[in-house]
Image: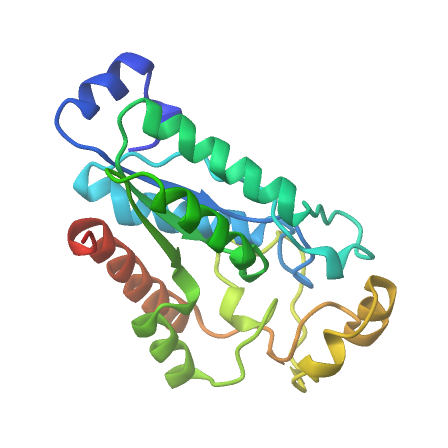
Length: 233
């Protein structure tokens, strides 16, 4: 149930019987040979597949996030922490004005995580609001399945390579890229990050079988849906 497929009267009618909603957070940044919108595609799709069967509305994904290290890769868009935190607080303020009280944030980009403190602080000042921040790819059951398949899972590697994040006509390398030195990379400027990473993959295989990827996806959907159904304090 997407907000994009509803009008205001339908939302008002829904709020007469339920107060849950989902807000997906994405990003527009380099993902090696995958779509620049990978994080947004995955967060929104995860939200919809988890929420639709139980009739919970999903707001459109916020398609930009914080990714300053990748600014030497064309197409990347980065929002500063203060701006991003204020954006999220304003969005959350808007949805609560209308009556949403249980809000699940499905975050698809690790770089957005610093804003979690700001939205947690905002929710803490709202006695009748319950907020869950869910990094879907890093949730316990999902990550267990990922590492069970292949422990070398990283940014822009096989673990983000789903049928819906691939680009038509783009061929994936068949090599297994050595994992990067994360400590070193975090000290580099954007231009140096591009020189250090090359194509942008942090390491590991570029692609695994669709069967393996769909197995991970199904666990992640179930884990996300469980939060909507039973995750509220």
